[in-house]
Length: 260
Length: 306
View 1 (cartoon, chains in turn orange, yellow):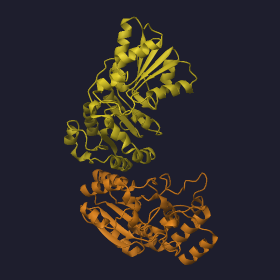
View 2: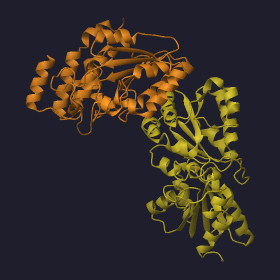
View 3: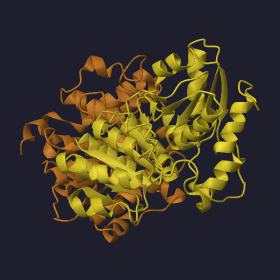
View 4: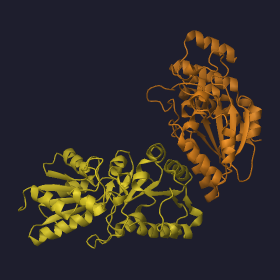
């Protein structure tokens, strides 16, 4: 695989360390959401996504810090730029901006990614452009009606160049997702609507990579990645409050120690 | 006007493979010719306007020029945030085609009356707003500007219309002015017929007026407005839209921005919500948006005999 060298270069540990460092420096939250997708991004950007022809959309824009850290690790963003995260006059806000190299669409309002991705995938098919479209979304985004409009559309139109990865960390802003809208049966829902689906450990890069290689002609792919919000930092895991809170000095030391 | 749209779009699509037509399940007896001629570039996305707007942004990102067709209310509002964060934020050539601006869907009731669509589109930066007065302007505007690299809102009437005075003229960011006089009537595309009839009737009384057709709402025809109003005593705007945020506001802002002293009267839809419904003709009349209503507004200014 073209990305095998990158695979060695891109490390979940280093990405997590950068996430916690930047979050501490900028005194900004959304750490839990960013840590949740670190391994998914590592799997995607270790050779699965071909930047020449593929399109990646971070539908859960509030976890953009994780993407900035991956871009930095890949050498596509400088550390100086990363250090502007959430500063004044910076392009690096909490949510990603399409004017940055490596970011195709600005996101931040939930539930837009699957529709944007379906549009790109449909256009690629009409025009005959190569490449796949990857959309990474949160489980809370499943609450948005537009997500289901897109899921129905992509299934009906057999957009097999479209892959949605669900960061299934079981938490949303105010409560566990199962207590807000229980969508634990999302596998069956998407299958009914014409999708191929896989459920994997969202912190196992090999398992993720294998699932992302699934190619079923005539069916878009829905990968349910079971994850832990705050993965890698014991006091953040499964804690709703770490959707918003920044870390203090003692928490920072403990977090960095645990990540390794 | 919608049939002219489809006819012109088919012709454009014959020569430009980037053009694709999406509809949110509307356009019965209108869109079929496009669907037949360009089956591979026609998609009924279902009753899902929000998805349609983001699909279009995604397609435009890949180099296509998507037209998103629905009734003006749904087209402009149901996927508004998707349009804002998609086509507008990324400045992509997505075209919203809103059918039946104003009271065109009269008896369908208030859910189908597009009375604030222009206001919504005007506040979005970089969005072009085109509201043609007749089929000739639809054809000209589309042929000359369909490929511009900006998002666009096209506000179309349902029925066919033709104003020989315009002779199909449409220019980006410009007014089309017919006649001259001490009073200017500035009309949005769909109210052009009323304005021209009032001009004819006043002319019969020996009173000259200028009728300015504002089919290019955005980019705003600011320079033309300043030039027009600098020699006028009064200006009357007429639009089948709320008086806030639309043509009347645009002219008021232009007058204020340029420190002009011209008297302005804004005619628009003043019905409160919860009013009874009826035909387009009835609803226009009730809001003073017919010939008698506009004539009364002109006479109230006091520059012409009552």
